[in-house]
Image (cartoon, one colour):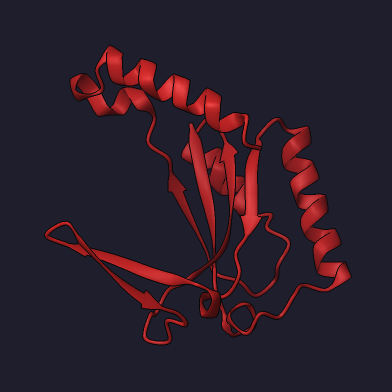
Length: 138
């Protein structure tokens, strides 16, 4: 199972305040523990919404709104993608998060087989080829 740990934005992240060396070192240590446990898949921080855009589609037509998004209650500052044997195991790791004052959200990622018959062998093959090509972009 894969899970995304979503790091919620706060006034500091929305102001573009960068982490200190100590904060980066703590996060690096946490990530290294996830690597050592064979669980870390990916993770990244996001720029503030002042450098973002929201795109809403209505009847197939896009409408673009530039950030910042001050009216939004919950914004994302980053994510960590992990694999775990269960929700409980993932939650156990989230409880070890190095920041002392932060809001996180833990969400399970859909696995291909959860889409049932709609996810045909042809679509599975197409996705596998796409993921292989996308990996070349890294």
